[in-house]
Image (cartoon, rainbow, N blue to C red; front, side, top):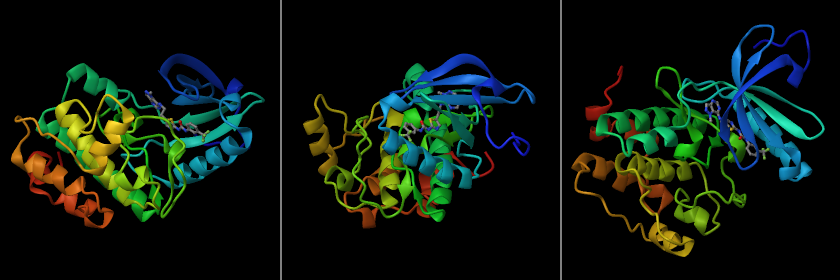
Length: 272
Ligand SMILES: Cn1ncc2ncnc(NCCc3cnc(NC(=O)Nc4cccc(C(F)(F)F)c4)s3)c21
């Protein structure tokens, strides 16, 4: 995907393929670069959907963050371009699509599969945090599966540099919000550690731990960590989740300690 000759891409450089997903701000399409036949995913964002001022600097920040990240478990962004109505993100194509689709198809994952995803996500988050980037929006919709079935974090559309107190204007699911974010307190990279715990539960159970019929109930469950573990969850898995889903961000297990946790060592030994 080298672009040394031209300084920027345009839509005419690509043959557009089938839609890969539909998002709030725009859709994602399979696309092939005409000259190299390189296959990518093209996310189309409608400028009308997002205030122009906001979108420009947010896309710029996302692109600048993404272009600095190189990790097997982080979806690559190769660049972006825009026309008068839309902004296009040129992304690595993840062959097996979004994790939430796999989860919906299978209901829930066995402990070995879940542990491998949690291990790979932990490694990707450790890498992000060394680059002072908090993702802030870890959830199955933003996790994609590559052609070797490896997990890839995507959509840094909401990521920021740590520490941050930026209000979360996202109106997506509340299930993954940490207590400090709900209370609008300044938050740091440990919000990603909280959401790692939420994700681990959702992979093993098929539902997020704090799901409730209304958002107020979800808030309460999150703030008091009101959580029920089904009996099929192993003691070791419960132990890991209980060390991640801790209200005080300082007391949450560190990402390096996650990789040394017995549940991970037993179910996702290195080299698997
Ligand atoms: C579904 N699917 N299946 C296979 C596959 N392969 C690759 N990608 C897929 N999907 C796209 C994944 C994304 C990666 N990066 C994103 N980035 C983003 O969406 N950024 C973004 C959003 C809203 C607003 C703003 C703005 F403007 F405000 F900044 C920025 S979305 C795939």
